[in-house]
Image 1: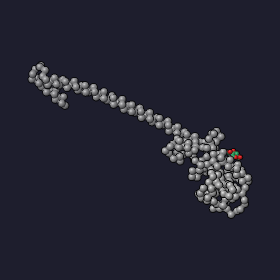
Image 2: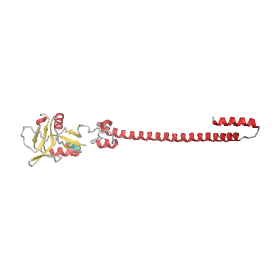
Image 3: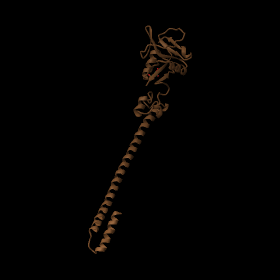
Image 4: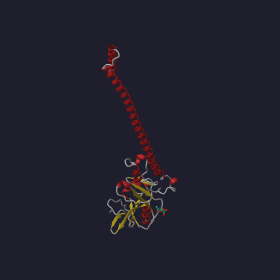
Length: 240
Ligand SMILES: *[C@@H]1O[C@H](CO)[C@@H](O)[C@H](O)[C@H]1NC(C)=O
């Protein structure tokens, strides 16, 4: 607007003063030149801005692709872990007995609770309770063999540390099971070296130095003392 005014003013002056170039019209020319320079500058600015935004777009696209790939890799790990627990893959997967452990899950998803990503906490045939998995055997061994068998599975004979677990194992079982309880001298100790505190001994008095949980009897009183060499089922515990 200002430029147009100057130009008109210059033109008027020119009419008045004939062909002589007045200072005003000179100013107008200068301003015109400046205007052209400004337009060129704007175009340059637009181009820079466009380039800048394009680069940002490409960067964002790259981030999306990277995140997508990363997430897919993570999901695959979860799937592998879950698959490992299905019977079909039991023979082919070397880690089938361990399945997808908590550590495995937390390694991939440090900020996510395992349940939310569907990661199984216990292997097939193992029962979850608290931060442990329990395996109730379907075959009989001596106490020592049972403990060895549990150790080979990465755990130990079960340590019944509270009433909840005692009730849980009694309810889940239907046999007599070795638990991780054994007499050493005068004291009964758990396999984790804890001294027995809360106990659920039955009134039966058959002697022996190893503890058995008898699922057929009420949870309040269903432990029996049996000879460690005798054969019965057993309960393994795996803590995670
Ligand atoms: C546990 O014992 C059974 C029967 O003896 C055996 O078949 C199985 O391989 C053992 N498991 C482990 C992990 O040692």
